[in-house]
Amino acid sequence: MPHESLTDIGPDKTLLLLDDDEPFLRRLAKAMEKRGFEVEMAGSVAAGSAIATARPPAYAVCDLRLEDGNGLDVVEILREKRPDARIVVLTGYGAIATAVAAVKIGATDYLSKPADATDIMNALLANGDNLPPPPENPMSADRVRWEHIQRVYELCDRNVSETARRLNMHRRTLQRILAKRSPR
Image (cartoon, rainbow, N blue to C red; front, side, top):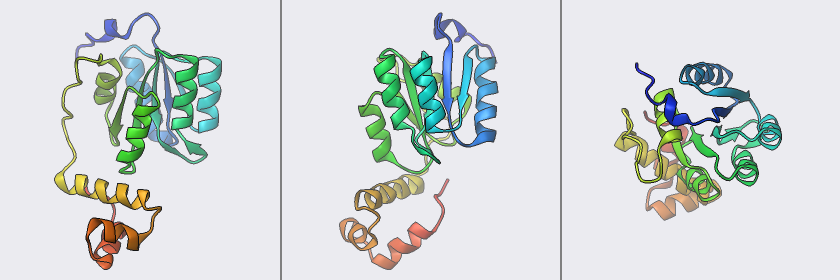
């Protein structure tokens, strides 16, 4: 694969990768280094916040849900310390609402997990007018429906009865959907 986009990274190639999924973090770091980035890894909000404060990078890829908190905290620190940083938020929990919140507080873009290095690279380097190309494997209709149900469930503070009422759905049906893993 040609690396024609290396010139697009710019003079500052610093990239913070924040994710508590250690194998994913290592694979992504290797892939992004091959693409010309100078990668710094963090496995927690605490570590990510420390890096964002001490050495705010030009680019960042932040997972939303980490064991010690929310990746949005790191996004906020980065926005404050380095307003020009390009930040992509990864969400693996069907949280469209949190992805919207991420963009509102300054993320450049968000991607659903699993995202590959090429999708992440395209999102990091896309400028405002040029949208990145559509994903190779977009969410299925079942997955979109599941994401919507999860979002309403979260907005209803995980109250099954209230969620079922708002979705005009039988409570038992909703419980069955919530008990299953997300569709691909």
